[in-house]
Length: 497
RNA sequence: GCCCCCAUAGUCUAGCGGCUAGGACGCUGCCCUUUCAAGGCGGAAGCUGGAGUUCGAUUCUCCAUGGGGGCACCA
Image 1 (cartoon, chains in turn orange, cyan):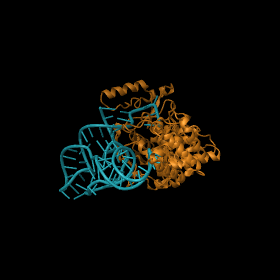
Image 2 (tube, protein in one colour):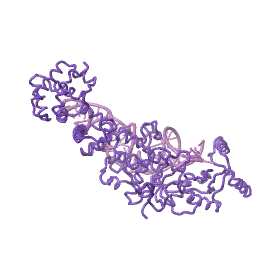
Image 3 (cartoon, chains in turn yellow, orange):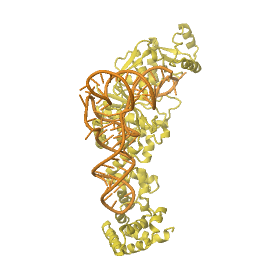
Image 4 (cartoon, helix red, strand yellow):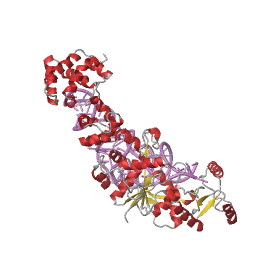
């Protein structure tokens, strides 16, 4: 039997790094085992589910390149692929109803008429008595005629599982090992809400069965829920249960569960900041999993074939991992440096547009000029969103002089003499190349008895307005003779000295 | 309060009874260098504590401590 796994997000928020990592592990496992990756939308939270969230999750998965084989949004008109759908739980209410009826007929489920207030006091009383705050099952033992009367009266009610009181629920978890929970500690949890909509517990178990899911790979915040879902399988008499793999959580720098207050957590924010999708994948893969030699970087060719080949659920970490923004930034830099020049420009372009550096399209000349400029800064680039700030001065007609550059360089004695002198030399050149500009500057320094820096720095500032920037002579070559001479000539009057 | 999970440097991790405890990020020293980076070569930094088991525990067992998760008509 080929493995079938699923990612089952609830559309109540954006795709965050934890969800993305869960999706990634499912995806990696399915690709490695030549299995099937299913996307199922768990939209049974009527109050919080939104189309916007669903959209964001789909967009996030697509951006990351985590493609699913079965589920919604797969045909050209956005329809389902797969015979075991529909893949939205709210479109499967009749399925859940049938399954509830089946349990009801076997007295394995029962209606509960307790109000939320009743349950609240029940819980408080249990807490005070230092007992587990679980349902006291008063409706489970309701007399048949009273139950029927209240049902006939349409009293609001939920349906609960009449779970066994004896024994224990056991299952094996690929990551955590053998698990055992005493049945007595569990309770008659809610299967179907007053609204008639199933709970996550009920719908999820049924769907995993009906969609023939073989491996449930999810965050270990679900570990405590698993015995309930196993009880459901038992109640239905389903012998074949999925294999569970509960992967550890991702925490923020303070060790608590990753949340908004830790900064960027949604995949969309990482995209905006200029992280590459393949970096998200590579980094997230390492957050809770590793190879025996702690390999850091993986060949991303052929849809990350190397990661797919090497990934093993068995090697997942049991403990939570803290998300390290510094490390993922480092990795982003590594990936950016490995990009071809053409690819780099394509990747940066949306950020140039976003920053107003250029329009969606540009003349071939401008595009080429930006291309040349960008190449000079590739090794310095960490986040794509930083690219505009690195090369914008190549484009601006008026050089904006940084206060620091003016202070440390242009205010030094002779700075403008150097600029004028070098400019005169440059004017003699046919065109500016990295080689001849460097030769000119070095010769100039020797001739005037100056240190190289006393020449290089003023020249740099005069054309860029900054003390930091690309390799000076390559920068001059890219800017071209005309632009360089114009800037050098204009420096004196433009500088706010 | 009850149940469950977890524990190697600041962080991600390798380790599966005997290792100078390995790698990566970050930090740091030197080199390279027109700046900023990148790169090269070094460095500091770790097995939560206590009992066992064993000739020998980072590794196995138990306890303690610490961290996390669950205990909803949310998923």
